[in-house]
Image (cartoon, rainbow, N blue to C red):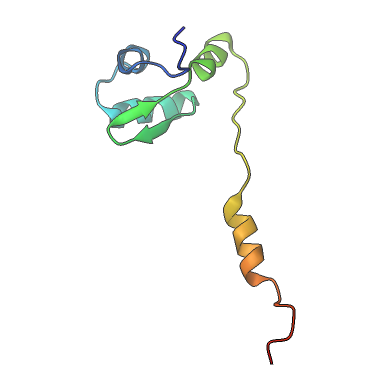
Length: 83
């Protein structure tokens, strides 16, 4: 397993059976394997593929929702005197 954590482009092709990113994306969505697209490259973590092969539920971190935090901050009432 590579140290960087991502499948190499050739590994993604072998896993999905597709050379083009659009086919790879479609296959990964159908298989339920999380991925990210960076330009013409489809990024897939080795850990997600291992979990999928082992039949384990995939753990996907969604991280904090900064847009929700920013939304609340911008809607918060202004305090202080600005008269």
